[in-house]
Image (cartoon, rainbow, N blue to C red; front, side, top):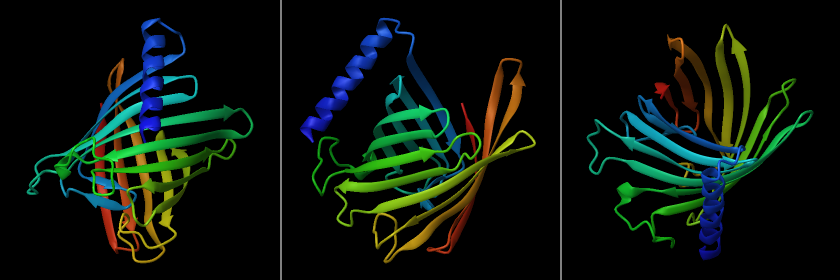
Length: 234
């Protein structure tokens, strides 16, 4: 764990150094989404609207960043909050699509536990992931994730997605399942937990500003629940 944290801090330092040196390939991204509720992989969190800021730094195929979810107008005490750190590396080819590896540190401030408590009773779960996106001719998306620390079930999640565009609206069809019992995904056996379609349309506000609007229909066949969610990206 100490080695991993040291690696991430070193990587961040290198990216910041290149950024400060005006290195042309450095990318800085900051934004925020507002959704009518927070649903992740077919699971509902907080039963209320959610504010989701993000910040990332990247150079070539490497990206390091942070993402959060903070619910509001909720009857829950404390109000649900999440603050994740992530690092990824992607390789893109012209004919075969892109391949990526991902590390995510899920941290939950609303648990009331210390950020620095990384043991099994702490407030972190660590995940590794692999992803593939096909070329333009067949843009299928394949992703697999595995909790390797602080999850007794060692939960896994596999998702298939396929994007299309219809009348200037971007659509993404997804199907995700967990292959075994998992408290993390609220299953007692293997199950299909995430069937959905997400639609995104850019609404023209001014000549220089578009507002992406998202609408998602999500069905969790295992839990027999469905959700219709709307959101915007700033």
